[in-house]
Image 1 (cartoon, rainbow, N blue to C red):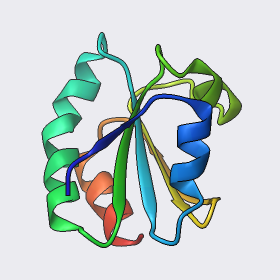
Image 2 (cartoon, rainbow, N blue to C red):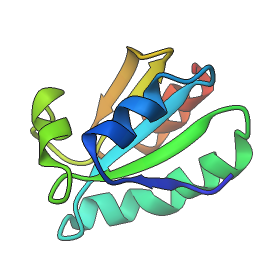
Image 3 (tube, rainbow, N blue to C red):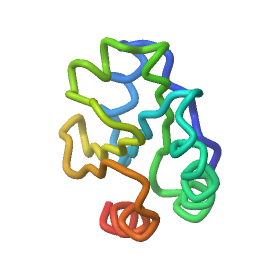
Length: 103
């Protein structure tokens, strides 16, 4: 399943309040570590069609990142029916795989 880019607070709220589990990658174009995690995030998206995968550029949608306390990149947050149920900060491949597996 392709990764969808979140472009506004309203888009973010709509995405996380659905019936399917959601994982959001918080990243920035200038973040080299974020780019190193992108291939794995894309692979996990393809392997997990029951979940929805989103990417949010903190430079474009600052209000969401600030409201959720995202201070370090990359950051990954899992939501179910609007409630955050998991997160990961940093570029740990095995932890990201585990986070997605436990969705």
